[in-house]
Image (cartoon, rainbow, N blue to C red):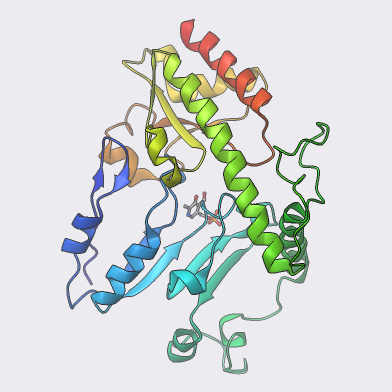
Length: 301
Ligand SMILES: Cc1ncc(COP(=O)(O)O)c(C=O)c1O
């Protein structure tokens, strides 16, 4: 088996789709793609990539772990063959999710014990199910739906139509419509937070922000911000910055967050990777302002 990797455009950390296409042939069995980068926040054009994979006769597999808290996932619209996700990323308990087209789940043979029934989905779900997590997942989906129905205060702040969860209730009362509405609100809210934080980060002269920085292209980005101090000293490594932020009450991770191929490709792995700031729908503009003030103070020394 040969695994081929697609290139990125290093200047904005977007996927080089032409390069990906050039790596496919009639021998390609599977194209695996991340929906969004957990390091630099780039959202990949997965629908296009799935179409390209299918045109080459390959199956398409999507890792939607990082995209899930930020945007609506519609497997039917994407037409992916498989999609995986982890529910803790969209505010649920620790449990993995696999979506597969029924034809594949029927055709492929799971490694299973003989007494287990051989029908879908049970042939893929061995032994006693994790009922408490499944109950938790149901409630986290309901939480998202409640946001879409305007029934969740996502922060202690007073009602404000600009905040997620205070929207006008929809006419279509289905849970699906509520989830679509929630992600529409989440996306718009996060875009505003992202615009504000990226504009302000650009003002901190020593910092370099990785990934898409052009506001015209923010539709292809989620608010996951990877940063470094340019020409960093020993006191300015991503670990040092994360530690100092932690001392001030901000939790930010440093390193590669398992996105090792990217940190190696950008040649930042040996010097500590990135400082990552991850924003979601319950963060406020005021929190972003405080964080950036702290960061500016830290890098100014
Ligand atoms: C894009 C992406 N894929 C996969 C994973 C791993 O998921 P899990 O923690 O459920 O193994 C992560 C975790 O951060 C992730 O961000």
